[in-house]
Length: 529
Image 1 (spheres, rainbow, N blue to C red):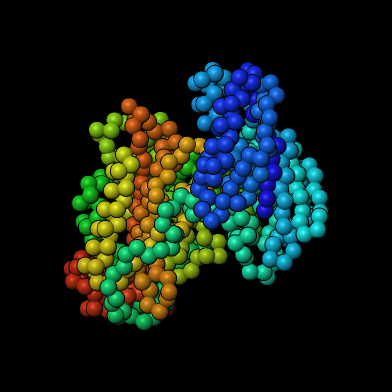
Image 2: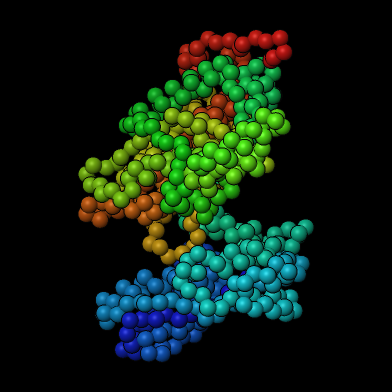
């Protein structure tokens, strides 16, 4: 795809006297600012100001770009540095950003894009739409700055275009471009090491079990499928193993690093999720909760119909519910940032370290739920911290190193790779908001699964830069740089990975685990297990 934008930047007064400085700014922007985050061999996919002129207090620019720094993002990137340049020297500020015309050229045909023409014609945001040989030109007119920041054009394109079905995606028509996934674009720009690269691994170990841990757990009576999708009831033997691993991980990672226990709420108000940028990135991955209305009449009807028909009248139940006001915690660390929201900290009191192990985490995996390793409801120990950039990186690295050490002591085979899906980048589009990112946002440690290429992720170690600092307005008293980080220790997956390698015969388990496991038994029934 190619993008061409006609933009207008309106200043508080005539900018003719600043013409030479503006010329120099544009030349430098074409060399650096508008190519920031674009690989050296992909410079043509960045943005460039191809023409400009001054009319009184308005700077008119033409910006052309590829898909890595789209033209509207390039225009937004110019705002802050232009304000700093002209404000300091000429005492003028930017009053308005406006785009009279924005054109997107979409290649069509084999290996390119399919266009839903009927849908495109129905979208009121599309001003014009032209079909040429081998391409479609979509025009959107009269866009305000708010429209650019909301990525209206991106959403239009995502809605009406798709890679041609049955055609292997090329670099020109990647999944990231078609679906506008920040993890396919921004992660590559932010992460200084190739996502997916393995940076550490254990020695090879001979597995003591060859079956499917889920099937064997059912057979042994350690778990029982619950009616809800992606849910299980865990019987005493499974709980005993999980509690043992939890204690080992606490004693080996959490306590030595000085984390202190908090109790985090699990019912998270939607405005908190909005500040986290989760609603922009993963709205389809959460469970939403609604409180009941104060409407006795509706609930009386509900009860009467339930009694008569012996079926749950869902439509009546919906009538008695308010709009969704909460989600059930999908990340577990959300309350920590809200706890710090609008607070001022002093660098000498940092880092602040918290952990929570008080309940379940919930994610809607849609068709991705399977077995005990990918569920909708799971247990974790979540470590979260606030500190200087050096502290944030150091703490993250320490949690990872100690995770490696304890896995070795438990005689488990593992490997750690550069994460390709930092959770907090899901809602972060390419835009200029002054956000600092770490060189490596995420490391992911996996326990190997016998007979499978990909292991099960048991530790997600993240540094967020200023993503949450900015989103929750957390300040340092002397404006020193502060970052946040989190490490999720997936207890449910540690259990799964442990059983996949060590099996169900407790006599084969390493001593460090055996000595922690309490002797329990499976409840016996005529029909189960």
